Image (cartoon, rainbow, N blue to C red; front, side, top):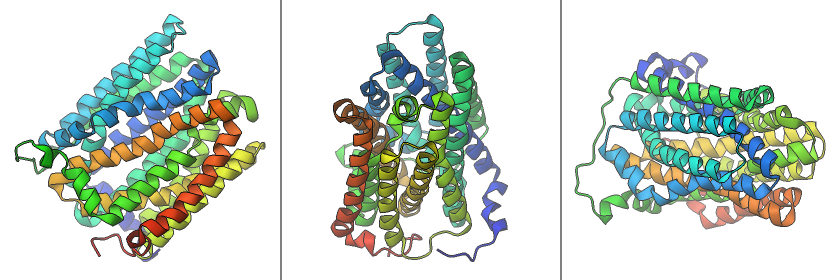
Length: 411
C-alpha cells in the first residue's frame, strides 16, 4: 500500500457539491437502517426467542433482490438513477413508519414484520444498483477510488454509531428507535432530490435476453471481478455472525440491548479505521495478495468470537473481522466501478448487490437456521473455519485474482 498521497487530496472529492449531497444522503440512510436493524433484531428475538426468526429477517429482505435481479439493474440503466434513489427511500421510510405502527399496536404476529421487510427489501433492491451506478456519474474518474473509500468509511461509521444509537433508543423505547429511523430516511430522500441532475448514459437497445443478462455476462468474462465477488459472497455467507448477535448479547455475554449495539458497532470500528487508511493510502500493488490474506484473517477473527465468553475479547475479535472485511469491500467496489462501462453499470451493480445481499441477508438466514439446529456458538465457529477454507480454495480457483497487482484498470 502506498503512502504517497496527501491528506488534503483525500478530501478533494467533497469539493464536488453533487458528491457531498450524495454522501450525506447515503450516510443518513445507512444510519437509519442500522438503528432499525438493532431494534428489529432485539424485538423479534424478545417476542419469539427463536434464532431462526433472526435468520428470516435477513431472508425477507434478500428475497426481492434475488427475484428482481434481472429487472433492477435494467431499470437503473434506462431510468434516472437519482429518481430511483428518491422513490425507494420514500418507500423505505413508509415501511419504518409501519414498523412503528406495529410496535404501537402491541401485536406479536411477527409475520407482519416479515411482510413489511419484503417491501423494504424490494425498495432496496431497486435503490442499490441505482445508487452505486450513480456515483461515477457525479465524481471525476481520478477521484473515484477516493470517493469509494470515503463511502465505505461513512457506511462503516454508521455501523459504529448506528447500532449504539439503536440500542440506546430501543432501551428508552422501541417507538424512539423506529421514529428516528423514519425521520432519517425521509431526510435522506429530501437530500437525494437536491443532487444536481447528472449526466448518464441511458440504455437504448431493445430489451431482450442479451441486454438483460449483460451484467452477468460481463462479470463472467472478467475473471478477476468474478473471483473477487464470489470470494466475498461465500466468505461472508459462511462466516457472517451478525444475525446471531442478539443471541450472544442475551444468552452468552448477557449484556442487554445496549451491549448488543456495542457488539454490532465493533466490526465498524475496525472497518472504518481501515477505510480511512485506504482513503489516504490506496492499494497500489499486490491487491490480490492482500485480498486473500485478509479474508483468511476475517475467518480466524470469527472463530475467536465464537469461542469467546468475555465481552472485551468478543468486541476485539469483531473489530478485527470488520477491518479485514473492509479490504475485500474496497477491492470489490473499486474493480466494479472503474472497470465497468457506464452503460452496464446498473446491471453489473444489480448483480453486485445480489452478491452482497446473498452474503449478508441470506447469510443471516443460514446462520439462524444452523443455530436452530446446532446452537449459536457452534454455528459461528464452524463458519469461521469455513471462511478460512474458502480463502485457500479461491486462491487456487482464481489465480488471476491472486496475482492481480493493480486496481486502476485491466491488466
